[in-house]
Amino acid sequence: SQKIEQNSEALNIQEGKTATLTCNYTNYSPAYLQWYRQDPGRGPVFLLLIRENEKEKRKERLKVTFDTTLKQSLFHITASQPADSATYLCALVSGGYNKLIFGAGTRLAVHP
Amino acid sequence: KAGVTQTPRYLIKTRGQQVTLSCSPISGHRSVSWYQQTPGQGLQFLFEYFSETQRNKGNFPGRFSGRQFSNSRSEMNVSTLELGDSALYLCASSWGTSGSYTDTQYFGPGTRLTVL
Image (cartoon, rainbow over all chains, first blue to last red; front, side):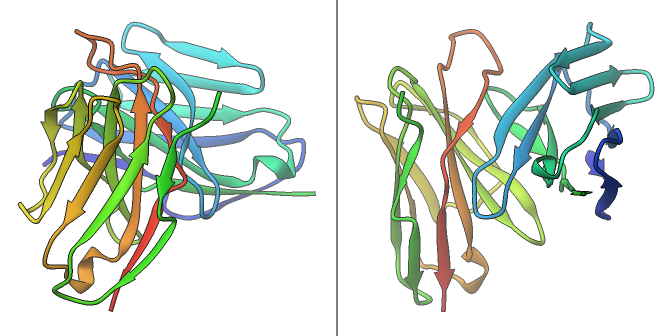
């Protein structure tokens, strides 16, 4: 069956460290993979999109990798700050126009 | 530029009733997608509209329907509400570039529906 999985347990890290979140998928062949941030009571906010022919994408303190052989994407936040505390969702497009399939999300808590 | 707006933000209904939720996309965006978010199932795709036509649909029963108007505003309707329909309903807008399977999605704040 098709699955997209993220670490269900919260990730707790110290301020200044690098946070690494994992997204694994099964029985999909996505051309794109996206990462979103969601704060409590708010809608997700788009962060980064990576294409299947891109191994890595960066935006400021964020870095995403995409390994289609391992069927995995890693999302890194360097020099993390308490303001980075949120739930991070990975999503892939499957089944046509703008149909995003989301993982359950990983809650990140950055402690001062 | 104003973001995606959704009304109402909160709604309480009883089983068997119906509900209509509204979404106004970012100006210029022609695609509107709807998602249901629950603690158990996470974010699930309901449907997507582009230029008043439903282009894509998720695996939800026919009680869930939607439409899009010529100004790109969209509504979704849920009839014969069930307790399990309690959720955060999110809409997202994008340019809806013809021929592309994916655009950056801009989400609204959601409508929190509680069914009693």
